[in-house]
Image (cartoon, rainbow, N blue to C red; front, side, top):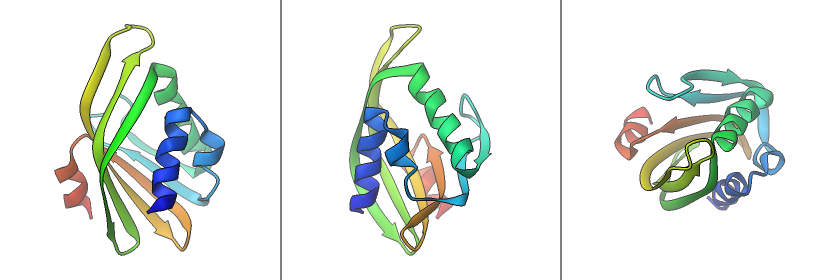
Length: 124
């Protein structure tokens, strides 16, 4: 659980090296069909590109983790996030997010992003 919290903090700081320090070579980053960049990215580099695109689109990003729930080899992270679009300058806050992080031992093998907690709960 602490590993997941530290990785959320790394994402806020834009520290992708720290975020990807313990992912497997067969890592998958999955965005839902309704995302701006839907689909699955493969390998650490694919995940890094997806999250770099997120960082490039927003600034002052902050994640408020409200719940961490362990389910076997998965951790469900839910909460809200806030930030501002770099191009538009439009601020937002309180937007829900949910992530399912799948582990193999102490390494992350898969990260699935959702906009709602119930979606993440159904996916596990």
